[in-house]
Image (cartoon, rainbow, N blue to C red; front, side, top):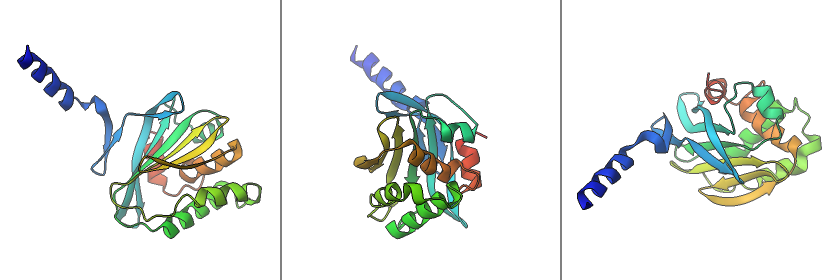
Length: 186
């Protein structure tokens, strides 16, 4: 009986169901939780800056979708996971990238959400190191929560802010067009 249990355990541990996708030698999980909802990995890719692989990024939705406008506009649970590959991305570089993404995602009209942007940016105070995991999770009527290495840094309310955040990756002028394609499963 013990031998059978060991064999079953070994098979289970080798099972590929725990991780759905390997991106840049990073295994992204096939699902994440957003409040009470289980989100499924929609797609993933690498965020590159020049030739440097910065992070593996995954988009998680309740059901697969390839329409970026619908995803951005939808008031539904969703998440972005960033698993850093590059060691040493300063908090200043992260905030600068967010700010550029907010400008691109709102066509330069950040005034209505400037307070929310400032609150969001305040969560990023540490340098991102290799294997750090950042989760940006949206739950309707709650807002966008930021988890860094599993610790909740805070939540910013508002659907308009959520739209601006997800536009960073999925908007008309994304941070990385190849990453956008990957997140959309294309």
